[in-house]
Amino acid sequence: MDNEWSHDFTLPLLNLLKTTGNETAAFIKAQAICTSNRLLEVCVRNCNTSQEASIILAGIRSWHDSCNNLEEVRAQFPCWKENGERLSSVCRDQTVRLESDMLKFAKNQTQENIETICIDFEHFSHCFIQEHGKYCGYRSEVITARMFENNREAMFKMLKIRWNTLPASCKYTQLRRDTYSSDRYNENNSFSVTVSLLILLLPFVF
Figure (cartoon, rainbow, N blue to C red):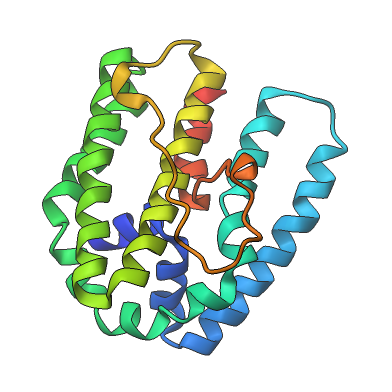
């Protein structure tokens, strides 16, 4: 359960790889999600401006980075598939702590609980990034780091829709610019968060 939660929470592409059990099927599914997200984004942008629309758009943008560089992400699928269980189990302690933080936040939406989430998310992401580099090499490490930084940035921006001031531990860090060989990525458009993170946070910010 913990491993499933960690993949679903942070890297939905890994979860697709696990659920399909096939690299080609996961890639086709990811392409379909990218297409659906583009259509949904157009639809939401035609709606009146609201907190709900802002949160949905933040969730959609979680896929922009991966969708724009899907072929390069796909190149990591073989190693991610081969080492999926190992990559999850080695970070189990960090996963359990962050999951507990989210459950506490669902019951009591305080600044103290937000701060705990931000601190433990740093430990959680550091573990996953480090282990991806260890088992799948430098390219996988920086791609994973980019995904986590995108998740982190969007999570904080979602929280700021509800709270004007966040704890110091929730400040942004500079996104790594060496993740993809392509120059197509625009840092100003990196409102990134995973679909699962959006689902987890929606009840708390409305």
